Length: 218
Picture 1 (spheres, rainbow, N blue to C red):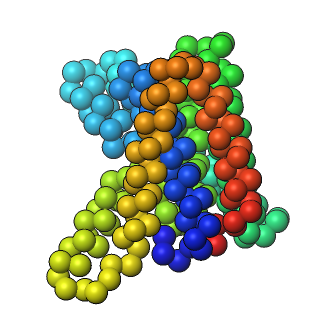
Picture 2 (tube, rainbow, N blue to C red):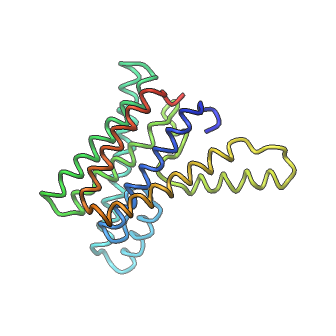
Picture 3 (tube, rainbow, N blue to C red):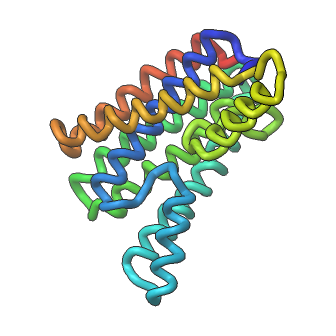
């Protein structure tokens, strides 16, 4: 994250907060499954398989597949935008896709069973990781924090070993705090608004699309 401008760094923190909101909503609605934390869903899948194929295993597998498909869609959307509009529009295009997917999920809750309606949430979270990418590779993991926490630990260790500075430590810490803040907001929003909070998440994504367009995430 240290190569990003200050404005772009703030945008990535806000995007991590959006991921936290969405993950909290999925967890509350689906009873312990995630929209962005695929390690957790993989654990649920393994536990379900150990008990024989059951509903929990099927839900986890569907969410994992949706997330992978979202990562593919985000990469494709970013590549297409880069080719047609220039690299500065790539992040904006990917966030536009994320916004549409979140709105679709919110709309589907009125028509189909919730596990199916919320699959677009996982697709959106997979796609969102393509917002900050370079040569098709993710530069900043916006929807999962395990790697972020590992980097925080590594940079703290470098300080303990006597290095004067650990570049990127503050940005990584703020990214994690943004995600945690988003989870908190999502949980409180679910308590007060219920499924309507999905529309709030879509609206936040639309605002962040404009922020990404303005900063270019450079």
